Each structure stands twice: as C-alpha cells, then as structure tokens.
Image 1 (cartoon, one colour):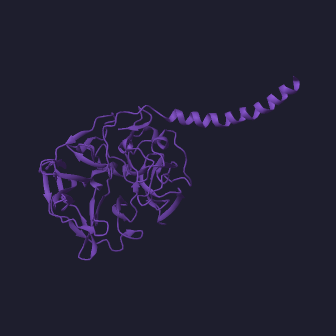
Image 2 (cartoon, rainbow, N blue to C red):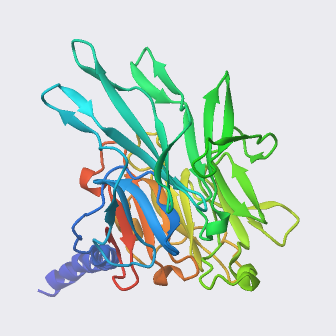
Image 3 (cartoon, helix red, strand yellow):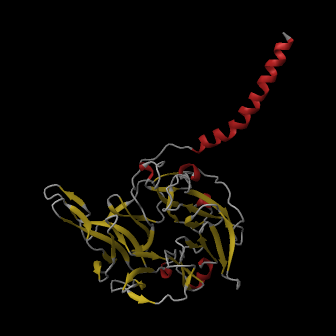
Length: 396
C-alpha cells in the first residue's frame, strides 16, 4: 500500500505542476474576454477624422449608413449620428440591374473644411458590368454647406486582372489643434505624381515636396511639428500634441507637440522638438506598423500589412513613454484587453485618441480593423473603442 501511495504521489506531483503553470495564463485571458456590445458602426473604416464644427470638436468617419459623426467628448456607446450627404449612397437598382448613387470612399479635414471622396458607378454592356467611372471631391463648410470641388482623380485599369486601380491617395495631419490641420492629395498626372493641398472649397493647390519627404518613395502621411508640416513616406505618424481647450494663445506651448513618432517598417522612431540630432530609433516591434496613437504614458501601435495573407501579421501592441515622452526600447503587454480583442489575424487600419492629454487608462480610444487572410470574423470589421468608465475594448 505504501508503494502504491508513493507511485500515486510521483504521478500526481507533475500534474499539479502542469496545472499550476497553465492555470494562471488561461484564466488571465478569460478575464480579458467581455460581453460584446451591439456593433453600431461597422464596415471598412479607413480613417477617423477630427473636425471642428459649431465651435466644438467632432470625430467623423465613413461606415454603415454613410457619413457618421459624434462629439469627441462623447464617451457613450451607440451615440454616432449620420450626417446628410449631397448625393444618394450607392445601392442596387433591380429594375435596371445597375448601381445607383455613389460610394463614400474617405473623410478628411483641414482647419475649416470637411472633405469627402466619393465614387459614382456606371453599368455598361449586355452582361451589366458595373465600374467606377470617376471620383469626386466634396467639401463642407458651416456657412456654405456641401460644394463639389474641381479635382480630377486619376483611375488606372489593369487589363490582366480587369480591375480598376486608384493612382492617387489622400492624407492629412489630423492634429488635435484646429489650426494645425491640413489635408493633401497625391495624384498621378502627366506621367508623374504631383501633390496638392486642399484649401477650402477652391480647386486644390499644387505644391512642391521635393526634398521634403522623410523616407523613400511618395508621401503617405503628414504631421504638424516644430511649427511646420512634416511629410513622411510612412503611413503611420503621430505626435503628442493635445487639444487646446481654453483657446488662449498664451498657453499654446503647453499643448504643442513635444515629440513626433513615426514608423519605418517594423521600427518605431521619434524626434524631440528640443533636440538638434533629428530622429532616433526607439525599438523594433517585429511586424509592420500600420497605425500609431499617443497617450500621456504610452504609444498604441497598430500592426498589419495588406500585402500579406498571413493570419498572424496584424494585431496591436504598445510602447510605454517616460515622463519626458521618450519611448521605451521594447514593447510591453496591455493592462486592458486590447490585444485579446484586436488579435494578430486583423490589420489595424487606424488608431485615434480623443483625449491625447490623458493616460492610456483614462483615454477614449478608437480603432478600426480589417483582415486579408482566412482567420478573421466579418462581424469584427467595425469600429472598436475603449472608454475609461467601461474599462475595456469593445464594439462601438
């Protein structure tokens, strides 16, 4: 009997160690799972845009229902409104077997104008082929409403795949301060790419960015930093600029950007406004960086590469900031459920902090995601949010 007890103990002990080693991580992940909210803002959301309207800060985006918006200070689930458009949204006409209306492609803004890009379609041929036949730029101002802007967007056509291709892109500074917001178009024209700045509802003004783009290739992003707009070939750029709530010019320096952060492939780089040494490498995160957002004590890093069909190339991570705004040399895990909800199966399209002057736990955060592989769930292609009162990431 004694011998049997010893054998039992010898077998049981490794099992105790095994269950002990697995128990905590499993239940730690389970605790990160929360009951999902009802998804109210969904679809492919390419950008979340800041815009000042009626003297208040709003967030705008393109999603189900068209042009969606809400006050930046609003931290309630299900509170996005729908703004009227100067055209009907695209829908299928069963009588004519054609597509009617226009598709909303993107939403952008500068200091005084909200911009949208839309695509009308045309159905031709006996088989009823439907294709985009041009793209339109519209601008909205408080005193003028919607106006169509004179701008020709080039469309390419791949005869092999029989797909239309956009040979242009729109980007913006999207700064918290209204005065620092700019919007730009890069478009292929006359055998080369040209850059245009959007100014009110007038035709965009061509600008020269020769020797002004940091990185190799075309400019895909911009940020207002050190009293000027900086241009980058990276698509992921942000600063630690904060909202100027009191509108007192004497306090502007308190909320101006002290640091700029940008992605170079898998690497996070930064610049200190007081430094003359330029940019410094913070760390490598091991996957392509697709989006960035700052909080008072961290940088949220969206990951993803649309050219990859891998199901583990996306996700979200973060780097902590010290009290001087300098990023750490490596990533660290989340205290929230961010990486549990936004897994490596999803590419992060955009990140935004509606309260950039607050710590991560105290911030109102937003993200949109998509997937190009086979492991994602279509119901997750929507807007995600984190609110301090809720304490977790969930459907918006």
